[in-house]
Length: 534
Image (tube, rainbow, N blue to C red; front, side, top):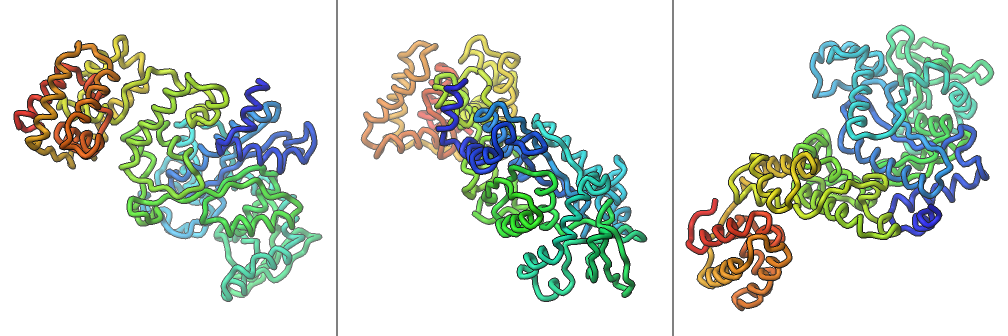
């Protein structure tokens, strides 16, 4: 175990780098046995705005935070940790979401906290409770370990009261931090406190004209001019979100929280406020936002993004975890074309794991995706190979596909290879949706016919159980023997275009072995004869 810890401290994998920074910059300052502070555990947090449904950003933040949490468990195995998935369900609903039924039920309650608005779906006691349940079901479906926390619960139970009184005591100092960041109109009425109207239940943005620290109250002016005094405790108010974020950091003693690049200024502001409250800024990783296929920022309102459920329609969740793992500080394009590569890369990382040393494994994304215990399924059949198999055998029936796989890897079947079985269905779905519509087979040129005939004859000399590597060597040698191809890349591209109807493809030796030598020779014969392969 000590060797593993030493390797983890030396690892360049970003979750270990983040965990190491957390340990050294924040936790070890508290002294041996006190790393978790008075609460007794190191707290990781992710935030969630429940006015909408969970999305791919929600998944990304939780899976990345979980990776850092797992890394800390290796660096400091004696330290307890928790992950809070915190729902800001005390926020007032400002507009009616487009994707809900029964909008007329919600419309009269605009401005109220989400947990005080009727559920338009009719399944829970409020709209907030409904979306909180959706969040938990979403996180549970991926097997995340977390503690769900509700802002409404924390405010109304009084657990935020002590820190809210600190906000009251430092009301003017907090305003001084926030006001320079606001426009002139907003500055005129800003207060960190948003009273909740006792008559309507609406979260009010109104001027606070007086604070009474001793009494624990504020006086605000309603739109009709009436002055109202209200306590800042017991759920009678909530805070503006940047002050709320800082208050939560202080009240919960949050140790680690990620946030997107769009919140850099908010993190700086909240960090100043939490220090005013006597707390400490959590260790923070700022991650880049996703781009679409045109390099433009993904926006839910524009609909130019890729939803979690869309990804999972065509690939297993492990591939999405890999996508989130890779370069979190770099902007990445998130669209359908990245899926096959993510799946193939995931498979390659899992396949390499058993052959690696402990130090190498800690830098393998498979370690972080599976918390050190990736599956041990046999390697060899990639997502891309399966899609091409679907293409040439003209069937997306899993039973038919498994006949080829079982012949290629004797003893395997859908029950013994559950991940590969999932991949079969995913590959067929992706092929139908994105590959088949773009298929464009071309006829070989005279020189290419000679090269394909050479390949066909050399393959025919091999036993039917020839290995993928043997067949790949033949592919290489044939390509090098024909000067009509500028290089091997041109030879491979010609095979892809002629045999598979696309510009890119798999290692052809592996593909021939999977499809079967007899079938592959027949495929070449058709291409050489100029038959239609589509």
